[in-house]
Length: 126
Image 1 (cartoon, helix red, strand yellow):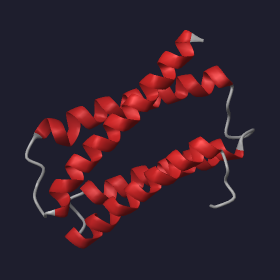
Image 2 (cartoon, one colour; image 1 turned 120 degrees about the vertical axis):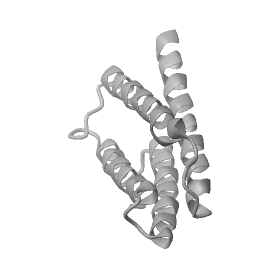
Image 3 (cartoon, helix red, strand yellow; image 1 turned 90 degrees about the vertical axis):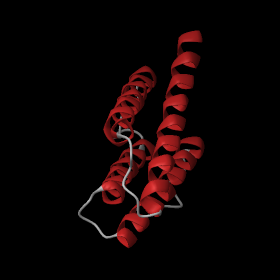
Image 4 (cartoon, one colour; image 1 turned 60 degrees about the vertical axis):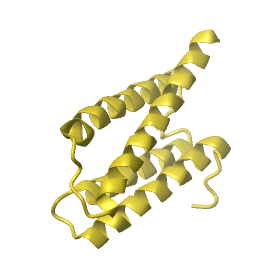
């Protein structure tokens, strides 16, 4: 049980870091600035995203959760893909500032829905 608690804490920590770094980067985008640090554009977010992915897969394996058996998990994976797409819109150079802002707001809204879905495991609102 100690290993599970550690793994869950690690996953929540990575998700918290991912959210913080996203907000930090989005702050620059919202103001129309270029993100000034290379490590903030690629290095740090990529490392954190890998941590989220590996800890999430480990939790799914530990609990034997599959998207074919659990509707809430399938919905979570779909929402994660949409979150990634909106993050791409937010940070891509090919979109206008207003489109980047909408993408960032949509990504944060999706992240809140994902967290709510994980806590309640209720897909009736979607």
